[in-house]
Amino acid sequence: MSSLPPPTLRLDLDREALAANWRALDRMSGSARAGAAVKADCYGLGVEHCVPVLRDAGCGDFFVAHWSEVAAVVEHVDAAQVAVLHGPLDGNEVAYARETGALPVIDSVRQAKLWAESGGGPCHLMVDSGINRLGISPQEISNPVVQALDVQVLLSHLACADEDSPMNARQLETFRDAIQRVEHCETSLANSAGIALGSDYHFDLTRPGLALYGGVPRPELADHIGQVVFPKAAIIQTRQLSAGDGVGYNATFTAPVEMRVGVLSLGYADGILRSWGGAAFRSGEKRLPILGKVSMDMIVIDLSDAPELGEGDWVELPYHLPDAAQQTSLTQYELLTVLGNRFAR
Image (cartoon, rainbow, N blue to C red; front, side, top):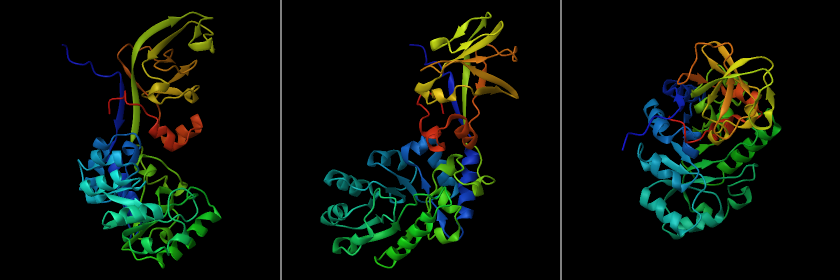
């Protein structure tokens, strides 16, 4: 059998920018050290591509959401450096934690009991300071099973760090109160945006995610964070349109004059959603507008101003995350995590 042809989609990752972003966030964390949220396959970019870069840059604390994410991360770092934010749901997940050595983040009294009944040992503890997702409530901190935990890092999570909201100060006060009420070794509150709120929010360990991968959740980060992700696609066909020809589903674009177009083999199945309609790809400084609707596997672009481009040539979708969020009305988080697995990374 012939070897598999290379994909006509490519997701170029700037590893130097990724490392520089972590170092910048670590510096901005002041006396705290920066960890890394590597959940959701490093926000869709690939654990195998990102975790070694973060490790070699100096990161020593890694956070995933699901137990199913542990195996990929521990191929690159020691399991004791990995924490699972969703905690143990049942005895099987407790057993897996013990087998792998990854640390559970205890999120409820029930989880605390599960962990204690299995023998206890080092864990993290999440306190809900107001976001009302996972985490024990402040009223539950005094529960004896919680008090008996061997808490390595006491955590909470900010709900509005990307805004100048009074809720940030309220959560900070709640977390400071929790710190006084349960024994622990270290504390952690700030995500990417929380780092930009200043030293009051840094504590011992910060947990950036989005900003590592090029996101800018607060303007204070803009000068410190570089673009990491560069989606590219090869032109798989060129064609000539006559005036009056329609393009794509529902013929939402009609050629006003004779024009040359190119077809790209990507679409909303790859995370380039229909909200990209009206945007443009680029080849060097040339702008190549998207024509008509984005399909599942195809996008048509205008090549009128790029006669040098032909089948097999590559074009790039501008993916500076703050700008792309404005273009598409998607969040920067969504723009990263929707990118599909047909891209060669």
